Amino acid sequence: MFLQIGLAVLIAFVIWKFMFNEEENPLDQLPGPPKWPIVGSALMFIGMSHIDLFNLLLDFPKKYGYRYMVKVFGRRVLHIYNVADIEIVLSHSKNITKTMPYSFLEPWLGTGLLISTGNKWHQRRKIITPTFHFNILKNFSKVFEKKSRDLVHRLKKMSGEYVDVFSVISDFTLYTICETAMGTQLDFDNSTSTIEYKESIKQIGNQVVNRLAKFWLHADVVFYHTTLGKQFVKCLKIVQTFADNVIVERKNNINQEDSSLIQNLDEHADKETKKRLAFLDLLIVAENKGKINMEGIREEVNTFMFEGHDTTAMALTYGLMLLADHEEVQAKIYEECKAIFGDSERTPSWSDLTEMKYLEATIKEILRLYPSVPFIGRQVTEDFMLDDLPVKRGVEILVPIYDMHRREDIYPEAEAFKPERFLYGEVRHPYAYIPFSAGPRNCIGQRFAMQEMKCALSEICRNFRLVPKMKGVRPTLKADIILRSIDPIYVKFLPRQLK
Ligand code: HEM
Image 1 (cartoon, rainbow, N blue to C red):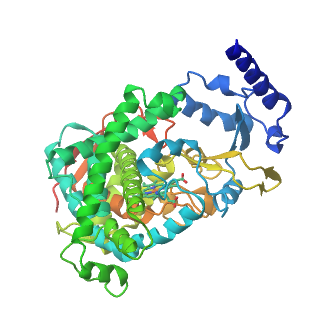
Image 2: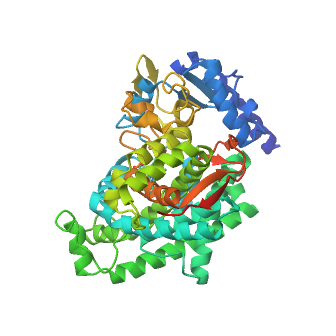
Image 3: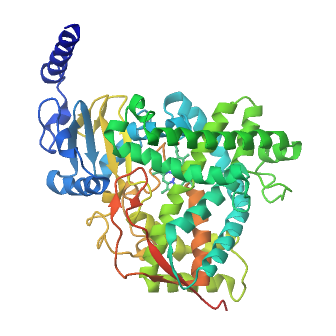
């Protein structure tokens, strides 16, 4: 009896709240998919796969224009495609809070740099920015060189067969980030803890995405009772334990020489140390100065491990697919490398990579067509004006990078792969090209990512001619935190004679 009365009161409250007590919102005047009382447009998304959702989002701006609003129950999600709007949103100094999908990463990444907001984010960004100092990145180029050489060896063993590119490339990016972030080599260590860590870190990303795709798993009370939730907890434990052990070991080993080197990076630009510095060492030095604690170090190490391997792995995978399809682009990269290396078989140094202008333009074009992060979300915490439109606290904003990068009026022949767009100084709005986002919350790892990708792609193009499984075929994509393909992408790597 009491239960029924309670239920009736609850339903009456929900109806009153959504139908009669809802504040006027200027966004309600914007175009958008049909809305019903209480549920908004929620019904149209029920049972939709991630592929359908991705396609629906591509279709919406054609129907509703470059500023539209999707309402799902009480949530108002404003979608913006105009570069001027995107600039206002991404350059806003106060509205820096991320939207809901990232919260599912929180049990793993904590509130590290990617997820945190407000003062915590400001402080962390200040502490972490020096870890991406030019001289630190230069120090990492040795890791890029070595891992790229190992990658070429692995591909040589598979020459002539169609290779599932992502599975090989994601090992490369994982090994690279692990050595640069934690100073730990995963590739040749066959201990159980290392193998488990490698597997878990790959699975954990998939588990988060699976959860995101199923709205009934969004509530913690449900999720942690499912098989998926239990597997997630298991992987989380393995990943956290491994990271904690590495941090403790590294803390015990950091010495006076490392500390002084880190604190005087500019003076010691070219100094070689016996031990290669890792991001983690810089965080340990920051801890010694009381700027970050153990929990903070763990959050940031895990954040680098997540952001630093999947993003570059997907970009390189799409990149190899596009190169295989465009022999003329491969040939130009090969010629550029030949002009730099001549007959030498040495791996590229930092300054060699800086000279690779055509390859740089190619990578930019890869990231235009396939930005590893297809959408950026912001939760509005402070009212602001989007030009003439008042946007109120509580609204969510979605910046669809993937779709904006394919706007025909900004990029003529937008679907075509043309690295030359980025070679001859074509003028466009600075916010019209944002694979690494822009404004205060832009990607802190972008220079790292560019150098790593340049190193890997130049080594691959010097050593192989790439052949597609089927020319002109493009993958089916799905809406996710990272831009993923439904099916594997296959490429054949035919060895070149290096001369
Ligand atoms: C192709 C490679 C990469 C792409 C396309 C990319 C893209 C992005 C984008 C779009 C954001 C903003 C996300 C948002 O606002 O929701 C971001 C943030 C971030 N990225 Fe990257 N990223 C790449 C590689 C890396 C690498 C290699 C690292 C680390 C070594 C890294 C570390 C981060 C971190 C820590 C943030 C959060 C920054 C903050 O909020 O202050 N990324 N990245």
